[in-house]
Length: 196
Ligand SMILES: CC(C)(COP(=O)(O)OP(=O)(O)OC[C@H]1O[C@@H](n2cnc3c(N)ncnc32)[C@H](O)[C@@H]1OP(=O)(O)O)[C@@H](O)C(=O)NCCC(=O)NCCS
Image (cartoon, rainbow, N blue to C red):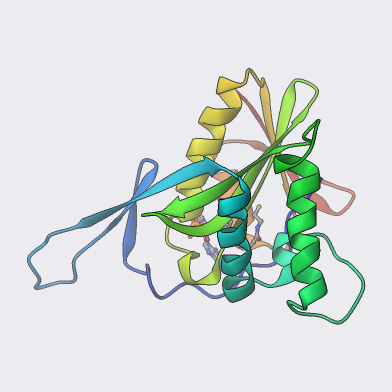
């Protein structure tokens, strides 16, 4: 499984005035403006080669490797080798595999790929994972994505939704707690389980 990335970065500035509405986030006007809002819809699109290229570009520009892929050998950062490993990781686990381990989705915010989410069947459950680029964190995108993931999990007949994070990942913990999930610490990880 793709380990839940350990950290959360600073709040994104680009979308810092967004308010959550369902599976969308809505940009609110500042005091004194016309009050118009621009709805930015969050969409999950099943990963393909085209989206994978966009996803890599977003990962390189907006995330640290440990947040979005398993650890590997070599120097830190987005070396050419690590970028290749990122592509290979997704090809082996989802888009190019004869028997995919998981379904991976590119997260699109108004047609921009801002991160990725995944659902991995584990018996009658699904395990979920998610990462969002720094500029878009802390603005409700994660919550909107979880709503979509829950719907996707139900659609494939899963009966439980599981997500794992680390104790220090406050954003992930808040996100998981707000689902009404049972949350427990197991072997140093925070494990959230929700009956669907
Ligand atoms: C974890 C992550 C997916 C959350 O997505 P997000 O879009 O940033 O989260 P949201 O804006 O929807 O906020 C979810 C909750 O976390 C809180 N939160 C967001 N960023 C936070 C931060 N840096 N510190 C503390 N709390 C934070 C929000 O206030 C909200 O809580 P609330 O419902 O009580 O108001 C995202 O920050 C991320 O991709 N981080 C790096 C990768 C990672 O850690 N992935 C593991 C996810 S399990």
